[in-house]
Image (cartoon, rainbow, N blue to C red; front, side, top):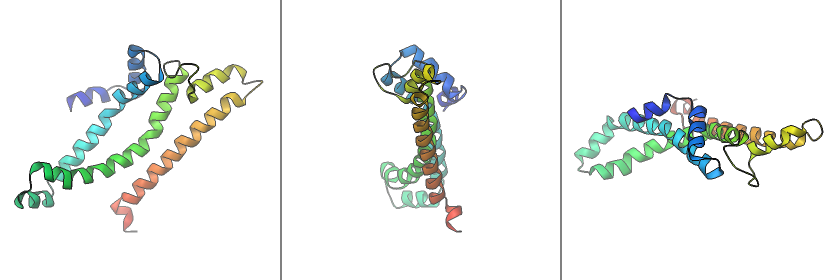
Length: 167
């Protein structure tokens, strides 16, 4: 967890830019940079959920029933960890999309002729006065996709929150 704390000490965009600069431009390299930057949050959530599940009574009952550690992890721990991770991932996809778009906008992401929304916005900024749609349409697509993933994540969180189920 100390390594995750080191990664979490830096702003995600700055760290992603540093990693992308270190490994070079390109769509694959920018995806690797995002992967390097975003894994600590998921590791922290998985560890926290596993530690809270570990002290549950049904885990103690599974130990008493003679299940092996592997069987307990597969049957009881993983199913209970996956839902919070899925909900967080759907909420976090919008941040990853925006960071990847920024990397492409500043030239560290997809390189021409490979299409990418950030690159399209960058290429169209010179023509805002005469052909505004060259930047506005990709920017609108980014907005719609980010909004859709955020709303989907909110819906998943609300659907799986036990406090909200009672209402």
